[in-house]
Length: 146
Image (cartoon, rainbow, N blue to C red; front, side):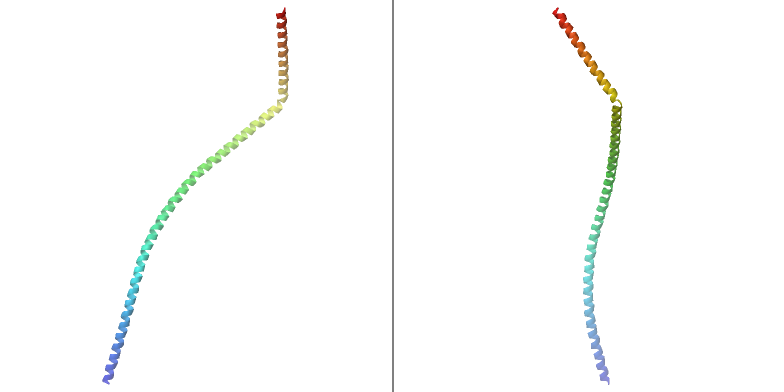
């Protein structure tokens, strides 16, 4: 019976040794896997740092671009305001010209009789001057012949 006890202790020791060998191999494999994961994480950290820096730079550029666009938009607003005022001024000038034109047309219609009379008197005056001049020339030619 004592032999059976030694044999079972030996079997238990061999089983424990086999268990320890497989446990050591598993731990070594796990250690290699963890080292690989650590290296991968370090690489990812470097890449994330680079991406973060580029993202911050892009964000700063975007903010500067937005500020520039805002300034230019405000400048365009003043230009559009000036163009609007210019349009209103041109409209007022057109309205004034239209008013003057209407006033002149109305006055011409109202005074057309007077204008016609003035033209007739002008024609009469020209005829009288012509006759006066003709008589004067006749007198001079008759006076020169005597």
